[in-house]
Amino acid sequence: MWLEYFEQYLENVFPRFLEEKPWNYKDDLCIIGANDLYHATGDERWLEPVKKNAGWLMKEDGTVANWVIGEHNIDKVSFGKSMRVLRQTTGEPRWAEGVQRAYHILDDYPRAVTGNFWHKDIYPDQVWLDGLYMGMPFYAACLEENGEERWDDILDQFQSAHTLLWDEKLGLYRHANDCSRRMEWADPVTGQSPAVWLRAEGWFLMALADTYELAREHTQRAGELCSLLKNALDRLMPYQAADTRMFLQVVDRADLEGNYSETSGSAMAAYALMKGARLGMLPPEYGQRGSEVLDGIRDTYLKQTKSGYELHGICASAGLGPGPDNRTDRTGTPAYYLSEKQMVDNQHGAAACMMAVSEQLRRI
Figure: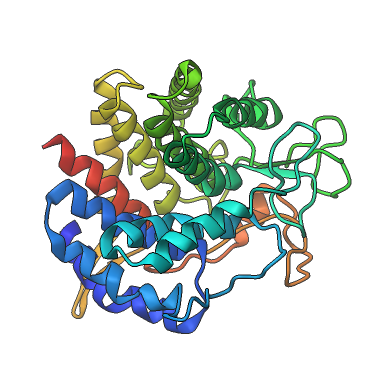
């Protein structure tokens, strides 16, 4: 079922999203997911949609979609991940140049007082869990390729993020921290946002696994990522929903009406469980737990229709503060996260499932 769905998705649905909006970090996830399927199966057909849709990211003349020179935006650093895949897949020089271009965004990237890259220029002094995934695995890949020794910077940023965003009482990470305490959503003492959003937690879990894969051969501190991952998953697993084997949109609030098992964040957790076990970050039995979460997504939300499969239960988007649209509702409360629309086949969910299924296939 999954592979049939992904084939249909990459052929028909993914290109439609690209036609509708400029390249986005969600599209990077689809490229990564397709590439992961290739490495898990050895079947080069998964690389065809990667090459076919490359023009939406960069034209042959080097024009990069949605690339704003001078803007500090950690989401756009993530474009470098797709460029690395395309560099490997096509061998074309423009993708190698694109990788370096994305990397150089970090040269003068602003940092919060804790040393963490802040999220975006429109979110100054804010550290979001999302940003750890957008920036750290790509940063690590570039350090490895260039033979640079700034691994302490990466490990320090993970440790600082833990300090900023961990809620020991809940055993969960909150979505963001405003180190300046200026935003209305920020706790005046801790700076943390009010709620635990599942996909934010998922971003962090994937960032830990992906960064460790690269860092383990280069720094003795890589083991710190293992400790963070195991601790996060040990504390997350008790929140698993018994009926779906997934996790809730607002992770710790099963009491709230309208709370639901959410696909993208659950797939990210499944990916981290299985990849963490495969890399030796976690005991082997954690891989089986991840596989069970993924099976829960399939049984709950992968639905067959007359025209093919559809993937449901995906939060379309969520954030904090006014953002570029000057919204007034992004307050960071549980009610806010439950008010955001769900979108069938949204890239966050479909791509995270590609990544998780790739890990499941490696277990067979």
